[in-house]
Length: 76
Image 1 (cartoon, rainbow, N blue to C red):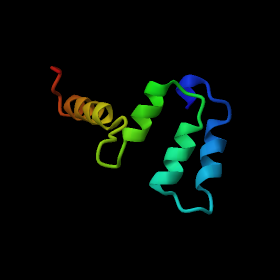
Image 2 (cartoon, one colour):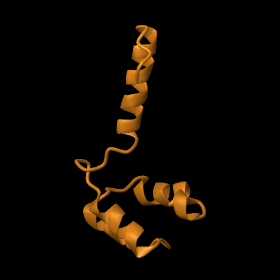
Image 3 (cartoon, one colour):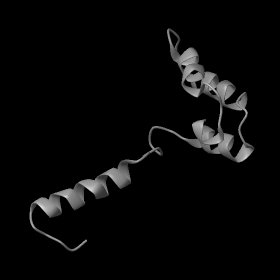
Image 4 (cartoon, rainbow, N blue to C red):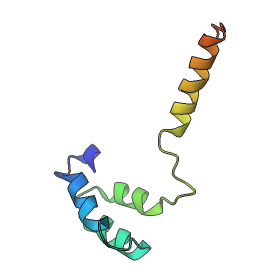
């Protein structure tokens, strides 16, 4: 949401989730009501806990680089 300049994006998500059960239907309704490009909405609606990795790949690579540096390995 921040990527597309949605104002108060955190507050909107907090309003959706605080004190309520979060369901597939509530997420779908919330996402469809956002002022985002359709392609972005489609991407969000396709995400699942099994398909979302966020920054995990990049963070893992950073950890590998740091470990190599600590161990004296200078090649990437």
